[in-house]
Length: 409
Image (tube, rainbow, N blue to C red; front, side):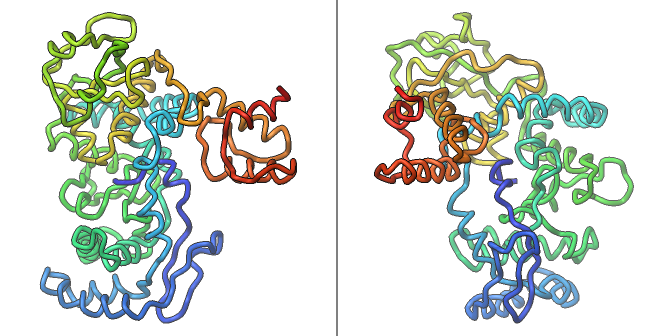
């Protein structure tokens, strides 16, 4: 429940071993369990705390058999996409035209179950489809890290030790209750599981057996229980039926950006008085107090954030995540693309120009990935390769001068 869909693209296959240094997945050997005596000692001490929390010896034996220290999850914990990228980049990553088209197809294919879930919990079907897409690309990227090893590693690491130890105990309790087995309990590097990436404590408290078949099954190809569980979670945190999460707005050129931020809430009448309008100049609708997210300042697209936006943040505490989920949901439901256009980045390049750099690099034989305007590691490597081939200083940076050279200007 705390991974973006494109964060999930970096997930690596993982199966833990015991006293040796096993490869964590035949398909991807970049992440391996490493011997770690301190981790082993931590696990030994943890067993007593787990017993005190009600975990049986049988569940401990079953759940901790083969548990290993996974250094790859520590790296991923420090580099989460939704916290590292601009809003413009994040929207390009999770809500591109390709993502919108796929989302609309998946929405149609699952419209019956989505409608049933909406009817019971009041969360719009398009919002559920969006979370499904952002979290796991509609069940195709649910992750294959062993959840117990992942959360044990993060608990041992200590940055959020108490949180992840709670996840570890909850994961063992899920095993103890017979909901699944350790081999089937796979997910993201952070322990999020299933179509909508539920962390173990959320699964325990909010997981739903939607069809009443006796199991809260989130690990199969059927997304029903995962979608219902997430809708139940949002509803329990106060989702308001038939209200939007927010919407794109236009800010006047003289707007003071210091007034923005998700914690600076005002009545809609106050925002109207400050000149905030919809992109076409019409009045923004009133759904109670709202905040304003203006990532680029006046002149760039802004977003008014209503109550339901804060509920989305209960799922992932990133403003980019909340805007990404909400915007993709609107697009899946038929809304148009952003009406405003983001201005140049700190290098002076617009998104269209960054896409052109990626396209031209590809044409020159240097793979920069899909031209999406997001300058990531692949684009940086392609730039370095081009610079080396041209005898230029190698820095891997996209710039107006690089664009001019690539385009022959």
